[in-house]
Image (cartoon, one colour):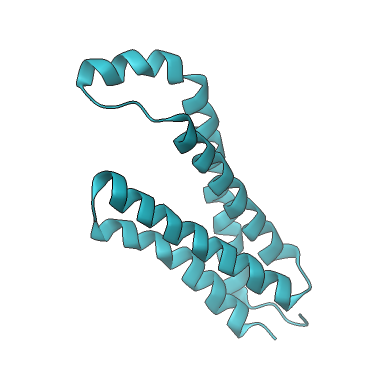
Length: 125
């Protein structure tokens, strides 16, 4: 990639920040899971499962890696592959949310990040 678009750079930096915050909150949730179990039980809500914690950590890493590749990669093909992986992660996340809590139009807002990432890839030369 000879010239990276400014949109790709900006979105990549935003993704790194979002991914880092998500990773930190996922780690904090895992660290506090035993103390939060009693709170969930008292509220009558089912506590998150281990798989939901794993999905959070893996998703955070996908977001961070996508951001780093968007900023640093010189290959347009690698950026495209990460954009597709990022979009797939968000779609899977929406499907899981629909299965567990039902459809919410607000969950579609998350798709803006992979769409802008891929648009930034498209604008790059």
